[in-house]
Amino acid sequence: MDIRYFDNAATTRIKEEVLEEMFPYLSLEYGNPSSIYRLGRRAKKAIETARTRVANLLNCKPSEITFTSCGSESDNMALKGMAMLQKSKQTGKNHIITSKIEHPAILNSCHTLEKLGFKITYLDVDKEGFVNLDTLINSITDKTFLISIMYANNEIGTIQPISKIAKIAKAHNIIFHTDAVQAVGNVPIDVKKLGIDILSLSGHKIYAPKGIGAIYIKEGLEIERYIDGGHQEKNKRSGTENVAEIVGLGKACNIAQNDMSSYINKLKYFRDYFINQIRQKFPNSKINGSLEQRLPGNCNLCFSNINSGELLLKLDAVGICASGGSACSSGDTAPSHVLSAIGVPNELARGALRVTFGDFNTFEDVEFLIKNLEEITKNKITQ
Image 1 (tube, rainbow, N blue to C red):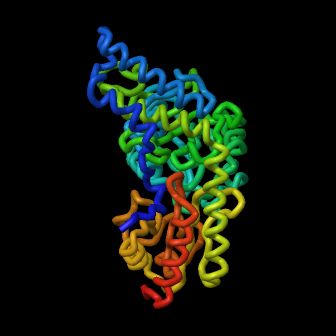
Image 2: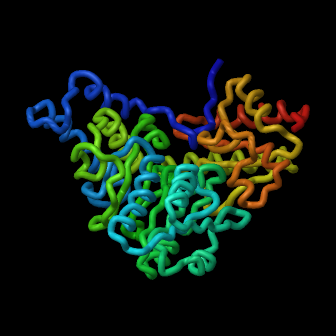
Image 3: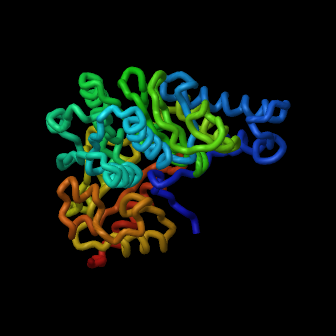
């Protein structure tokens, strides 16, 4: 049975070009990049080439990129690193502003910091998932040191007004962090023009391997070291570097930069066609998130009187991979916190389906998905 994969927000398939560049560093080029002999120096050079490629995608300096194990680690590093810096420098600042629809890596980091005495404001969002900028401004206090708002939501695809949020942060002398795990490679990002201070990204969302990520930290910005050990990554992140996967991330970023326009157009075509077909064939369905400011490959919808879990299993039976929401919360039977935050009733949220298109999808795949959704939902899968 052929697999038709529509869960690219959860993870992507590694591209062949990425694998080809990684292979030598999984076998013959096995040197430790901290070693001074040539095998180590070659590994170090490969890392720096990858660092430059990541930086080029974001329009920043290579020295502003630090490699991590994943987007979640980058998020933890941003929030906890900045929070611990306030404590160590005794700044008296203890307030962070975020939103109610953030990834669990942000929300759970905030919960941990609350236990350590930090104050967190969780902003509401509107029915499309947007943060209200006036509410954001009114939430700022003289104790606020960090604003962390995701670039684009991993479930509903809504893209936040990042440059406006960054301007608000700058006007109040506050650091601005964005979790851009879903956005990097899917939309053009210029951290300098946007005014972003810290940005998190992950390799496995852009056709690189799982287990590699990066964090952009603006030059001159201090952050408390999150992992103790050696002096790797300019003393920002200890641990022997995962050379092969760093090389893979660099290559994936290079491909994303070169193919950005055609890639976005392809995904938008699939997404818009799918949404139009859903509206015609399923008039009682609900599309979640903004239709204008939305990730190019994302469609999140809810079916009334449909159980999401059973729907996904029936799709899987015909070779279709999709999700009901975030893969990081797939073991949770409660309705999505994102859908709850935008006001979707629980009974409708339990019939949620997230479809996310990628570079390996074809138009025939999209047609196959629509056809099978029609057939499966003819006999209602009740909640």
